[in-house]
Image (cartoon, rainbow, N blue to C red; front, side, top):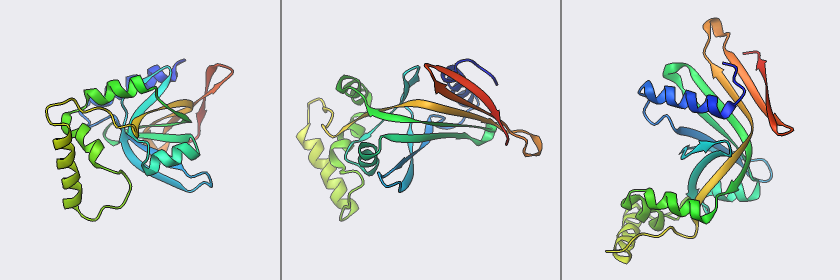
Length: 193
């Protein structure tokens, strides 16, 4: 498992999960916390990873968006049970530039773009019918036009400071390697299972 570049190793593991036929290998748990430390977690989709970090997109006014605004650190967890692997990532989170958010938003299916306009994510809604009515209003509003990115919707970049790779081992003697970023470079060490 040792590799000088944990981002490259992560991309290899993600590709292996995809090659194994895992449905949505890019699904990850995103854990955030309020400024006073109250945690919450939810599943989101990874939409890019490179030497800069890990990208995902959401409504900035959602619960996760509010937590990231007040406490801009988070943890990610990828768990691929059928191949006995998981990856834990921690780091600081910042918003992506508007241009990058615009480009990704434009790549989404039209109905997904319309849903972003229809949903006040994480806020109470009276009924499913109300939500569907909001979607119809968005369809009418943008009929025949491109659907622009709402001003409250965009991307985030988690810049990792630690990445842990976990590989299932016999007798619960799993292989764990923790990479930490310090002084501009990565160092690694084994952890007991």
